[in-house]
Image: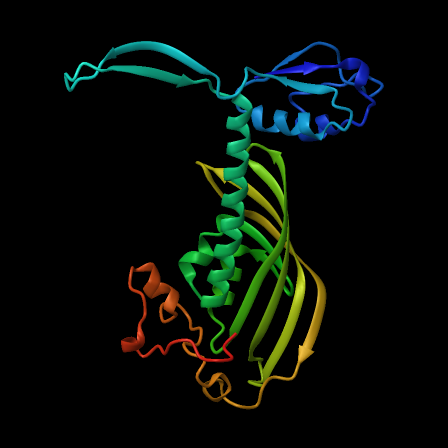
Length: 282
């Protein structure tokens, strides 16, 4: 991959440097150095981000036309029918590879965030552990320490019902193996406190995570939970079975929740005690 530098267009915004400091070099006044840049392997993703970040279009990727077709040769089909077969090769676009790699990384990070939500809501230890690296650190409300201890704490809360939802996620790649991720969340938590009194709380905030990629897998290395809203609510006085009525099944912990039957390839039916859709169901 080669980046063409249009020195005269540079206005010193330095956004390219912020995206790929090992690729783009600036002079003492903060302007891009003259001369085209040959991008090393492993830096193409960040370099392409730096090119796109320039508001003055002072950077351009030198690439062959995408999807150009090269006819290599013709040969007889092995069936012996006698028809010629044209072999066609599509040229590789290095920037497309970088973009595809970035999209895969972004999707892997989002998937990790979703696994965390399943793990915390379903008390699914495997899903919850899969969101953190073993030595990860978590600043999580009153708790501050190794993620391992937070996992044990979260799994040891009997009788709790949690609903965690991820909304906006902003993913900024620090390097090819690290990303700063800000994810807005909404959490509804209900369960007994230390005095065994049922409490219900609505929380809104952001997960500020340092993600790291190791052996092609993204997980949380550091987490800080930032709270933007807290609302103490009055929990319902009636039992869940009466409150949900015919809206069945009710969400349950691992492995009793219906999602785990689905993951095993079994779709619940009426014969399993799961009734069909009812009028008024959300």
